[in-house]
Amino acid sequence: MKHQGSNINTIKAENNSLILNLIRRGPISRAEICKLTGLSKSSVTTITKQLIEEGLLVEIGTEHTIKCIG
Image (tube, rainbow, N blue to C red; front, side):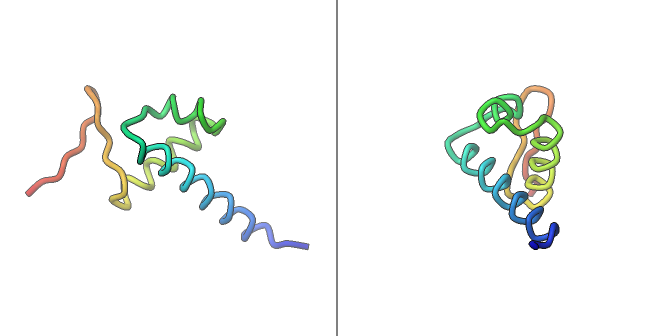
């Protein structure tokens, strides 16, 4: 029997890669990521928030813009 923790970590890593690969193609909305991946809105929001905190993504747009200071 496999350990549930390792399965969850594998799925998280695969979802992170899936989202990063989409974003590497160019700017994309969370809604479009949901459509293309089949991931839920909450999953996409959680993953993108984590990737932003890690400095891998920058949110752009009219309402939520993040830029580097300095």
